[in-house]
Image (cartoon, rainbow, N blue to C red):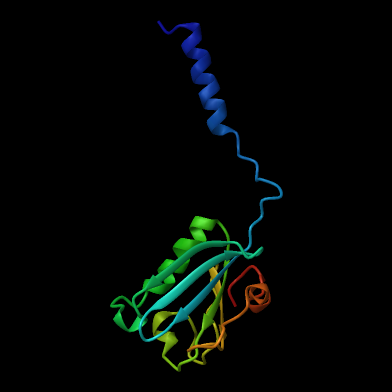
Length: 146
């Protein structure tokens, strides 16, 4: 026969699991990704809207990637991790077929999904690609795919 104490514990545990969590107010964090591919490597930088760097990575060049969905899956994973839609600045100085990687459409316009919005900006090579303060202006947060 279960004791009164164990019944209370079960009831408390059940009530804690059924109560929805409240969203944290004031902790909204808009994240921006700078994606800078080159012939030697692909640089990825994830920043908050305040300019605080959260992640910096130097990956092999896109020419060495065998799976064509690798970049889109990486962006989707970062979006899921951060629990928000990402603004991605693709610093495409060299003309490549970004459509094969799912980052642009056939006309070279940045791809949009529920996970990210890509904007193609100049800045390949040694030139500076999209200042941190300008990243929020690149991809509008319209909340949906276009």
